[in-house]
Length: 121
Length: 121
DNA sequence: GAAATAAATAGTAATAATTCCTATTATTAA
DNA sequence: TTAATAATAGGAATTATTACTATTTATTTC
Ligand SMILES: [Mn+2]
Ligand SMILES: [Mn+2]
Ligand SMILES: [Zn+2]
Ligand SMILES: [Zn+2]
Image 1 (tube, rainbow over the protein chains, first blue to last red):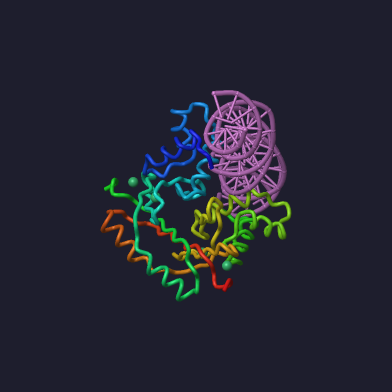
Image 2 (cartoon, rainbow over the protein chains, first blue to last red; image 1 turned 90 degrees about the horizontal axis):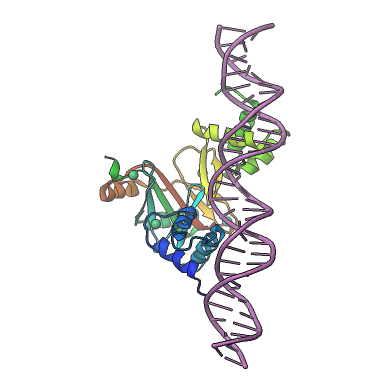
């Protein structure tokens, strides 16, 4: 994977926010710097960055969102303001439970708690 | 919501399997009983059944799957055979953690553990 | 530093999943 | 039975994403 200006900007933009942006939002931001970039280029690079482990892809319902935070963590999703908040929840218990009770070898834990964030009383 | 034959069959089909089927799979099955049913009807009814609380909609990556099991539960997803297995994991700890540490009011807990099921040694 | 090589791009077409639209049909209440 | 209207089939539209291709650009070689 050789250097490209567009990938560099895309990576910087994803790294600049905690909002877990969608491809479309990233596209809008990149255009401020590269007005004629194509949406396909944004998608291709977001995928490449994910494959290289530079960012993470997460799913919010049916749409993909991108996350600069690669360390294992979970999310709180506020269904009032839509915000996705990073949290680190203990999951050793869960891992052990499924290993013991279901003989299931866990490689990845995905936890999303949906509800109301503290901005709404 | 008044009675419809198509909705009845769709509901029965979702209730007949533990496989968390996609809309397309349900469509294929319903056609064995109602050959000229339309895919739109399948989607509309799956949504209505979800809204009425008769089934649940869950997301596996970007595609919706449907689940007859309405009681709160979690999923193990085997990335070898693709199976989604129902499990009940304790989450009181998680709820309390986010309530205390983030002042976040949880209404729904979504946990998916990805890995390898016991069918693969 | 120019030429050769091939990865990356812009622009656009294609696909997949899902929703919307509308004339017709079927369910239910009177 | 009839009237009111929810639901349907069939197809068009939408949304998110991927694929295609001629051209551009980064990197390597001389
Ligand atoms: Mn995150
Ligand atoms: Mn389930
Ligand atoms: Zn909020
Ligand atoms: Zn398996």
